[in-house]
Image (cartoon, rainbow, N blue to C red; front, side, top):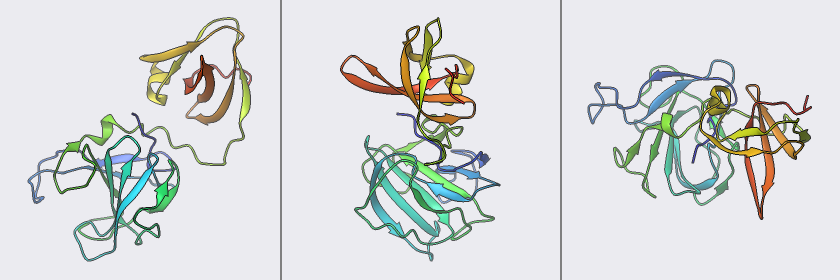
Length: 213
């Protein structure tokens, strides 16, 4: 599964995954990123909160949650202790806190880790966040009202991520000519649609606006 960005605007990487350095394990266990325009942090996926902690530790104010597909995510160095409680269910795009500079940190940023295990452990089951997060998907909840999307006279390919849509590669399906769907968001010039495929409802990005403004 590809997750949305933990930010609500474009962000930039400041420290890479597994970069060698003076960390306890000798390398960086996650990715550091900074957003210069909006410090709000949101959930990258639906899940359940498993840990909430305040300052006084290396990670400062941080939160850990288990995603609906069984991975574990850590956000560290947050400005304030997250207000959500352990056991709370969260939705992708839900605000979790604000980018900060608490704990062992040099400048406000988000340190994010993704692990393949159901429970978090320092340096355990580490995954490269760049392989699981679409950093261009920073849709803001409520900033777009769903509209009807109408296809033109040719088949339109559907993509899982904004990056694939813009590059026009790795399509996950297609919509036939004259077919209609519901556009629920516009992200970096791509159109996120929900549509019927047999007895199931699917979603994906297309490049053609289909009359959506």
